[in-house]
Image (tube, rainbow, N blue to C red; front, side):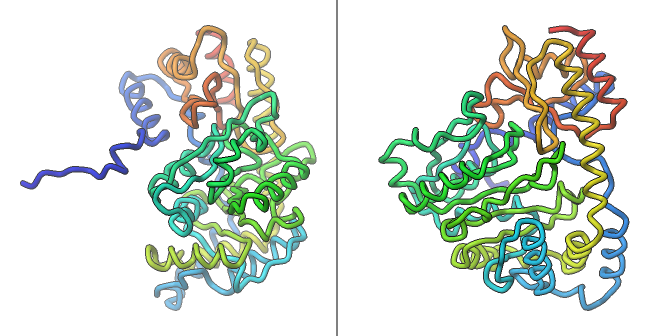
Length: 389
């Protein structure tokens, strides 16, 4: 037997947030407690039938059984460019400004490898999707956290970034509509980001995975709609949440050609591209009837109203989000995020995500995902009401 020693990069990481939640869930489940899981943002609604049918047909074609293109099928990248033009009125060169991803998480995890050297700085929001920070660390970089605070509408205060940090930073990760806070960005904020990036020579990576999950007539913007945005950055997108395709692993990045090319160069050395049949199904998703997206958003609107209004009636502080399928809830006085999370799980069988799991600035909050049906959400309200806080 040889001695196994993990690398420092693994030993220095905290447990992956959702893996730890799974461990705690299993402990409670073994006690026979019925669990309602509002933890991980994994849609419970099925992938629309026309997308499934497109996959079935494509999977039967031997032409799709071979290695795909590293950077994506020409037809898929063309479909992405057409979708961006229809949705955001953004023009993209599909050959140079689009790259296919095995889910947007893959691209986010790989992009620092293209630009971060040992000791380089990246700006990352806190709270935020944990992969931003982890990816920077895996590339040998250092993370400077920009706190998302309620008084700033959960937008980072770019003016608060120390001058010496801004000048040293190579990259910046932002994400709107935001996970976990469900905050949305204004056009003015995106203009400020472009100016900040130009002034400090920073590559902007905007995670736009939730732009199609919006309510009450609100239509989130693309960062690339902003003048000059394509000069300073790229945008990541995913079919996972928009079309309930989390397990399919298909997404894309778009934006400045040199950045897209560098990400493609990393990918060509690490993976062999997305399964071509899944890309064909992705074309069906992007170019097919979008009534499935409207129907999904109507369902999430009903769920949002049930949960947000019910929690408010119980005395918890939560705002109805304009986008995403998350609620960002202030924990009651006398609790930390972890303590309130533990109480909901151990006493009520309710799984939520502690805000500090997304970064130190998330302390004082928990996140709930609208990924169970309306009746179960009503049961969540009943259980919280019965256990108290």
